[in-house]
Length: 238
Image 1 (cartoon, rainbow, N blue to C red):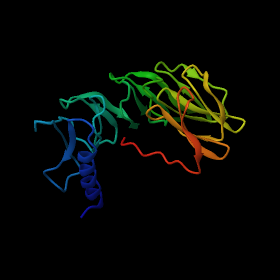
Image 2 (spheres, helix red, strand yellow):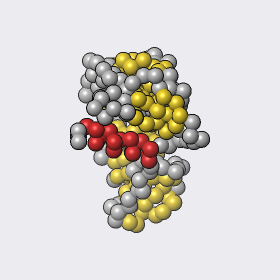
Image 3 (tube, helix red, strand yellow):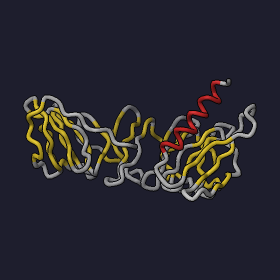
Image 4 (cartoon, rainbow, N blue to C red):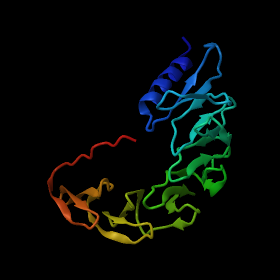
């Protein structure tokens, strides 16, 4: 059997298992010798819609749009009715988060597009991370320098020795080897004083002080005192 067909079969199963809404999207074939697939959208009531655009690959819906890779290996987006609402012209794309998705041009530069496919943040970055909803910020890298941008591309450069993604409105930073947290204005709301730290989830973050781990909230109150050698954070389903 063609190894690529096996990969696609596995991808279809994962698509179904990983669906995060009541609408799932699949790739189907009636001729196993063909490289061309049809995109089929199935809602919670079993209604099926076949997209008019043949595809090479497809991903799950996010905020009502799903990315497809057409037969010429370009990426675009379809809506819940199977309409190609963002033409397939990108070299790669991400999921829509907070109405924006990252997209890569053929020259390798990355920016963020809106739901019309227009550039909300111009493609001038070498690496980008998705936007975080509470802060409205995304971490990007240009010319070897990490910093953040908002939905219009306005940069935020913080006096930090290292940069992490925002989570629940705050991002980790580091000064003189110590970790703290700042907001989307670049203001340190928790001063760098911890030997190590993990991102905020559910209003809590694990931090390390005097060689021991504990848990604080965003007001810097200790929820669990620092007394553990190790704290592992449970993985979240993405």
